[in-house]
Length: 103
Image 1 (cartoon, rainbow, N blue to C red):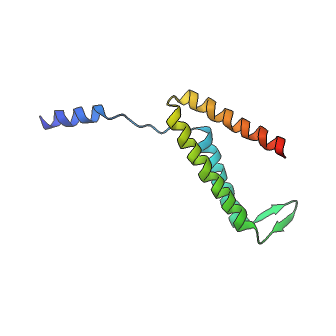
Image 2: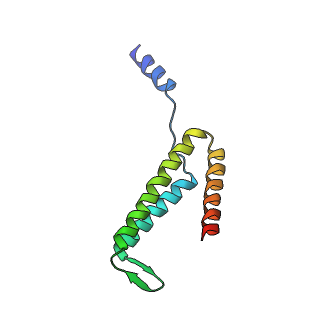
Image 3: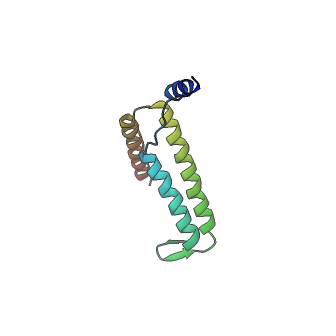
């Protein structure tokens, strides 16, 4: 009888599967870039920024944290993986366009 109750409880619980999304890749990229800059230093146009490497890597860590939080927010709003990918790719495209317009 106890085995049946355990089976019933396990059937009622929703199964959580890991879903990969574009913002997962973006946050992983920011964290990898932050680590690379922290270890090797920041170099723009051939001249190294010796004193700014730690600050620049912390900025990329902050970007990674913000993108991870945005991914969690989007996952709460869009349950389907297909819609999630579409919305997140649209968001990344919009941010890239705004970045290029401001630049």
